[in-house]
Length: 411
Image (cartoon, rainbow, N blue to C red):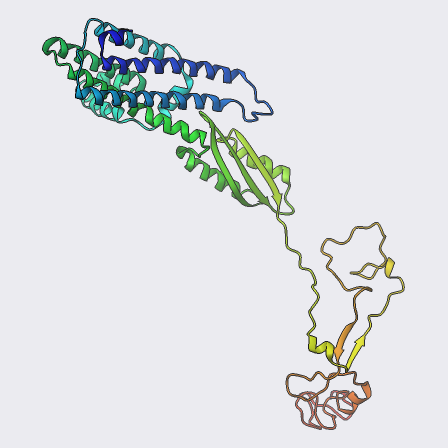
């Protein structure tokens, strides 16, 4: 009502800060409700993201109000109306008192955390530079101006100062355009203050990892990878669940002989100092065991008529023998840990050809040659072959250490 009676758009822009203070009070009530509520099966991580959503909605609405003020101010530059200053100064001090009382009297945990964690606005940076210059002259003011001031208190004081300058210029020179300029200044300060908070709360809603914990997380993951039994740490994902609450999940691959519970306890103990809500999945190393695969036989080998079939001998007590050690085994005993697909009684016959030749050019046939022919060729006694020797290919040549007719070594 006062904004309509004064026809001041600068007072309207300052009133939007009062509306933002009302939303901050609602956010504070949501924060207390979240502290009381316990996690449920539907919301297994709790209700902390409700206050993050409340902060994001409040800051975005304040920026939308600032954009509306900029649009109205652009229209007023074309045709500037007359401003009535009767309630302008009174409304300024009433709004300033309400804003400061709301921000300083109530402990608003979500907005206090966001104002410290988010990046500084351009208004805070300029005021910080000015404060360093003032504190260089008057060192006693360093406790008030340094470090960076509260952004909400800063924008309330800056908006009230802009309205006071507007009131004086209109009263002295009837310069009504300064009201539109003050409205634009208040809108820009509002947008610049709320934008970093919207970005920070939006990243929390998108489950991103906070940049300020990257170094600590890398250090903890390196410590976890050096634990006894840990082979690999992978698929790690950490995100901000709420303001000041970090959640995460990680997969840990361990040795086959490692104790799962001990590794889980050590990993949780290391990461719990930073990640309050943690999920760790432990799985053991899986070795790839080779299996015997059947060797393919060429088609031209099957078409040959001259082949020999060797049938595997059948075992009389095959049912009671172990396929690896050929010792009696109980039917209920489990197979050995590293048992392979060893050929047994059910293996197909092996097909061997009679016409294969040695690839080294010796001209020896690999068939079912009887042992008599082997002895006749000189393989029985070294150096006594009819046509070729066993080692050098020369007949009746003594070996390196010398042999007699019977193949006995000389003393």
